[in-house]
Length: 318
Image 1: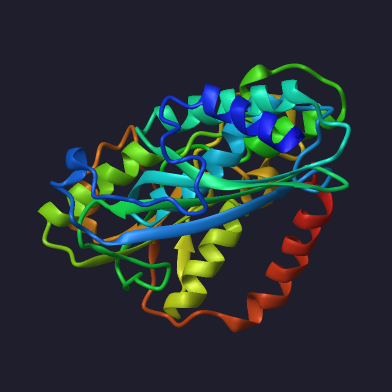
Image 2 (image 1 turned 180 degrees about the vertical axis):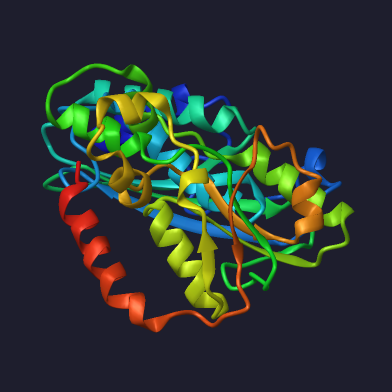
């Protein structure tokens, strides 16, 4: 039976396959994580062939890592470290054992960086490749994280450059192989797990009980809009201070501003935090791009935002 053969391949590629095989996985408290008894965080993300990715522009090994990392990015945005994932994989009949082998090699590469475990999932047939991953993480501490937590006077900041992933996608769509930095950012995004930990630790040391944060998976402008709307406060952004790579500017001299704001899939953290806490952060790792105003959120900008978001979803596929 093909499914059983695939299961054997999956077990061979995981460093710990002891959770695989039963209808449910029994999760016991992991001794190495007992120092952190904070709340669990759960997220799920689905990637669909020819909508979110194309097998013409990515390897299966790269695809698997990205599928895991987009979930780990959500955990980072919640101030959580990854612990477990489950994977539901739907595959066409044309897919052979090599696909499953390469996919789970990629999965193991991604989860092993964070000592996370694959604890189950599902295999089904489908017309195209569907990848749905549920990731479970644990908060670093009891600091409350929500996109609605921004306060007037907070510093708005990001963890890295924006627009590179959109640039990489555009290069792949046009069959161009350089600059590799842009292509790699699109194919192999990295969750900002370590920077999330630093933020949570700094917030705790500065006596904060909450701050606002999310990731920029749908674009920097989207994240800023969502946080501003959720907190009902206007954001004053210094667009010239948003970090952008020289590769993006040189490769797309007429388009880099739009890619920076609306490109998506950079998977950096976007956060609004008390000024004292921000001043305790390393400015080579965290970049101020604005401040939270005491003015209310401007509802009149909604139409312009929606126009750009819909354009983003129409153009940035595969």
